[in-house]
Every structure is written in structure tokens, then in C-alpha cells.
Image (cartoon, rainbow, N blue to C red; front, side, top):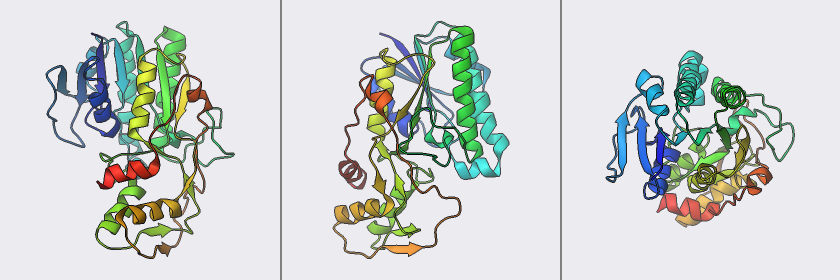
Length: 299
């Protein structure tokens, strides 16, 4: 049975990866528990409380067949307040793991980047060749991680591959995550009998992709699909306006509440959705419908 290391395995994507892979691989979770507590895991899943920047993490990365690096500082707001902390985690943490992996002989090093690397879109849909102009230290640090992965592939022959998920959501989403936060906020207010609040006119669009679909893409890469040294978008390729999202939440709760509109947030990106044709070409097909995905969250 192949050995898989999942960094950030307590987080949203990482925890679903553990659920999906634990019967087919011998899984080790490395997490510093900065955003959760130690979970109850099956016997064939090992947990190690450790930071990705540590010498222990570097040494461990050289011992596995597959490394899936989901651990990160994900708060855009915190990255704006403390760019050094963001870079220390997302740049040096990633570099630490890459250097450890270089000392071993892994089949694949999979890096979870972000659509935040693109910044304000110059055209739609956004393909992988779109200019990368991140608007936050978080976006810049994730892009830097991508470039280190690419460099380690070309300079050292390390089999790295990167994915850029768009707006991930799931029942395990972090309400503070700016990419899933709008869903959490809408659900929280409607659950309390209050109307959703939209900043702007609600016409702004996003590509909301289920964590389950992101996991399916990662599993494709872990199974040898895709090309080393490449980057793949992960989304649905479908556009959902924020107004439509709010209405779906109201419909699921069967609430007749009038949406509340407020002034647009400064610097908010108007439109964003993925071109996923490159991922489609290696067998990726998003399966989770947004309505069903939100029903899963709301229960």
C-alpha cells in the first residue's frame, strides 16, 4: 500500500482527502492544529502534530510516495495585516517540504494553490495562461509556492504538480475563509430568520466548487494523471451570481426574506470563473451541483 503524506489534513480539503484516501493508501496527516483539534482517525491513518516549517516535517517529506500539500495560511485579511507571517507559512513552509521531498524519491508532490494568484481578471473564463497579478500577500505567497514547485521539477526532477481551486465550499468550510465565507454568512443569517446581506448589486459572479470535486481532482493527479510541472484550474466552469447564491439558500430554507443590499466592498472582484478544459482533458468532471452542495451544508 502506497504511503501518502497529507499536510493540513485537519482542514477543509485535507480532511476530505483523508476520508477519500484512507482505504486505498496508508495515510499520514501532518497538521499543527492551528485551526482544529486532533480528529478520530482509522487505524491505518497516522497523525503527527507538527508545523510544515519544522525540520521534522522536512525529514518526513522524504519518506512518502505521494505528498499532498494542503496546509497554508489562508486568511487574506491576515496576510494583509502580517505579510511576513503569511510568507513564512506559505513560502518557507512549502520550500521546506519541497527540500525534504527532494531528498527522497516521491512519485508525486501535489501543491494546492489558489485562484487568488490571478487577481482581477483581464478576461473570462480564466484559463491557466491568464496573467497572474495577485492582489494580496496571500495570493502572492501561493503563486510563489507554485514557482518553487515548478523550479524543483525543472531543476531537480521532482514530480510536482499544482492546482488552483476557485471558490471551495463544503460543510467543513471555515467561515473566515473569504472564498467560502459568503456562503457561511448567508446560511448563518437565514438560519436565524434574518435576510442575506449582499454588498453591491449582487451581479458579481463566482465559480463555487465543492471540496468533494477538488478531492477528486487531487486523486486523479495522485493516480498519475496530468503532467509534472503543470498547473491546473479546479472549478466548475459555471457562473453563479451572488444574488443567485442568496436565493438558493433562501429556497433551501424555504424562507421568504427580502435580500438586503449594502454598498459594494472596495476592491471586490466583479466576475470570476474558471476555464477547466485543461483539467477536463485528464479526466476531471465536477459532479456536485451547487444546490445539492448547499443542501449538504444546511442539512
